Length: 150
Image: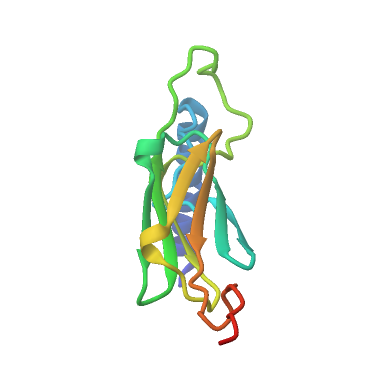
């Protein structure tokens, strides 16, 4: 590459960097968004249930979808968090943006225990989703009454 071509290349790159810098300074930061973000979840297990606890603050309950996929033995949590238009949030320059908005999806792989899909229940309160998945307990280990002697 000749010296003139190298100079032209760096001149072009420098101009583009300057233009982008000026655009960023002029425009207001956009809400942080991704194609799909993942909420944090905890998974608990006891003798009779699996419990998933998911943190999805700022999402309306009707925006949440739960799916149990038996072929993959996973629970999928989907939904959407829209940015709130609030009067008390200034429209000036943002210093830090970490809250993600838009569609979310989280796939939770379940441990190798059989569950009863028809008895899965969920509640959502104060930004916390609780999903209860009852375990199928084999008859041999289920509590039972002692048999009377003949």
